[in-house]
Image (tube, rainbow, N blue to C red; front, side, top):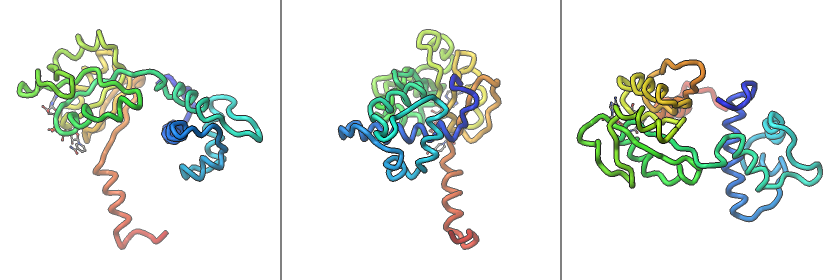
Length: 213
Ligand SMILES: NC(=O)c1ccc[n+]([C@@H]2O[C@H](COP(=O)([O-])OP(=O)(O)OC[C@H]3O[C@@H](n4cnc5c(N)ncnc54)[C@H](O)[C@@H]3O)[C@@H](O)[C@H]2O)c1
């Protein structure tokens, strides 16, 4: 990824949380905030917030706080979501279709530029202004789009093959919904999303075996 290699992943995850909060504040015309405000609203410790920002230089003014729109713009730049990012979706089934129709992606500057499937019944179908394309054309299509982000919504047994195609087509980061660990070159970053894993962890907290907190 382009961010400095010494920036820990949890810091990047928290930056995305700060950004969501700042976008809401900006929309409510709040001009300045303190790190204590951030702690109150996000639940992330004020010292942690300052440490997360310190990876990227100087922010805020002592005794004044942080200018909301400036901080929002800087974090968006750090996360490379200050301008529209083209994204490709592979697999236009239940999950892929839901993502294609999800307006929140566009609001966060992720533009689904193309969707692919390999099922002849889906190829050529219109979904939310996008015509689903044949997966075999992914390389050719992405040469024009230049997407570096792919969202994989295919079954586990298709995911590695699809990931290989996407990487060969210039994709550098993959959001993978398939329940499989992908093998990718070191330069490629994969984030796995597993609803079932999240539910299993939550379910553990219901069990009588979980220590009381
Ligand atoms: N639906 C959910 O709520 C959910 C939740 C968590 C994880 N997942 C995972 O996400 C993935 C997608 O789930 P889903 O429910 O959308 O499945 P789905 O069967 O509805 O859709 C999968 C799509 O992938 C397409 N596909 C298969 N092989 C392909 C290939 N080689 N190239 C391009 N497209 C191909 C299929 O034609 C189909 O349209 C699965 O791996 C699933 O385990 C789904």
